[in-house]
Structures are given as C-alpha cells and as structure tokens.
Length: 144
Image (tube, rainbow, N blue to C red; front, side, top):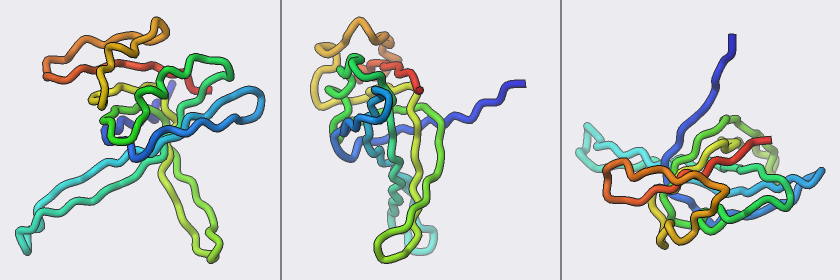
C-alpha cells in the first residue's frame, strides 16, 4: 500500500529565490515562505499573529527552463505543495537550531506584483481562475 506525506502551504515569499548549483548538474531554487496564524487573545482581546517560516526548494536539472524565477519574488503570494522535513544544525555559539523545509513538487502563484499572464511558458500548465478575482498560474515542478 502506498503512503502519501505531502504538505500544502499558502503564504508570502520572504525574499527572492536564490539558485544554487548542486552536484551532477542539479539546481536548487531556494526561497522562504511565511505562514501567518492570526487569533484574538481571549484574556486581553488583543489581535495576535504568529509567523512560521518554511524554507522551500524546487529542484531542476541544469539547463532547464528557469522562468519560474520571474514569479519567486519577495511579497508574492504562493501556494506550494511538497514533502516536508525538519533540519537541525549547530550555530557558532553552540546552540542547536532547527528549521522546517519543504521539497516542492508544485507551485501555484496566487498573487504576483506583475501580470502573470505575460510570463506563461509552454512548459507550464495554466490553471483556470477559480472564481476569485485574482489570476493564478499553476507551475508544476519535478522533484529529484
């Protein structure tokens, strides 16, 4: 029996994607996504927000179309689907830190600072508008 472990995250990109060349001609497109949880404090009535950062990676073969980088810009609202994992590391001051990471399999640009229609390539499928007033572009990426 097959199992599925996939996470769907909707949030804003925290900074422009960075491309890192890995071994064997593989590229890693890295970008952070912020998820905000809002609630009202029952005791004080004050509005609260907690931000969780998820470091996302899209894997591409060297020489592949990198048009998606036009969309992976700070402030853009995205939906990403992929396999989550936690990574721990030791900082210089010897304190242990951890982060949430996501190997992205699909990316959906929900709101961009520019018109997404002008950047659609034949390599990507266009998703019909789901009834809301925003344009959306579905960009499917293969995870290696």
